[in-house]
Image (cartoon, rainbow, N blue to C red; front, side):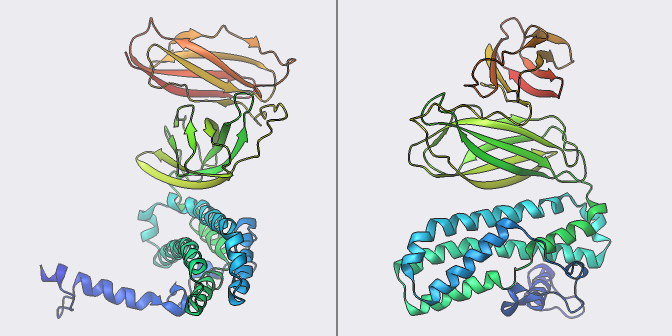
Length: 402
């Protein structure tokens, strides 16, 4: 009991609390950004002599440099005018750091444990990135407090907070890239990442209708079996039109899958923050993105943008009884076949075999097509719908619940 609870070292035995305290004292140094390396420099930070350029990280650090000079000059008007931009830039930085370090979550910890030096590199880097994310988020709060009360003491503290970010964390991508290279042979687990996302308007369906397009990538080192995703909103004024839950087929390492969600966004909203929960094999990954909302073009009829490749959307509603709508998008007219099979792979429904979709008409729908599937004569259970084209074969799962 004393070994687990005593804050003092027990002779010839020690204790868990005292060991944790000593470890914390050994690695903590506020002059070095909170966490310092051991005396034997970690090899991952000596691997590359050149700094890797990252537009998102570099843009945020440049903005922080300008902010620092404005704070020193006591220019509160600049901070008030640029506050939203500074906050969004911070969110972009945090999201980019999360994206860059996501492959490291595919490392097999059992193998990592066998390499003491690399294990130190790994956990040191993850701790540093968490510290960077925390400090960048806290800075946004400090900015709001400073604008409300621009006292001299707060001015000094704010400059110190900015320096604690742009000083110790100037080569973030270089560190993460080097570590990912060194642990490449240990990446034996899948790791999902929200690789890309944007918002486009769909005013052909209504003045507030938009579509959030996204791409999920397996950045780990093993197949991601039956990956699932769920999108939610951290901004007000956004409502989903379709189903925010997604099921995908197995994703191999470096493979991606694209999909989208139809939403309504209230007038006047310029940015929307989404949260995407990604799951495979019991492992859950969460990503956040702040996306800009394109301006309305109500005076001009706007065509829906064509996708770069074929997209098969999740049916809606799902689960369903007895009918549901299956939607897909094509980058151009092409022969397609849409079929539904049961859990054993037996075909139970077809949209009519091979057919050519009309491409001569104006692309109001931007290549989107919807088909109604009526399962009145089928029993409850899991079914799969498959879109076959010359470019790809896409499959998704749906549930009939009577």
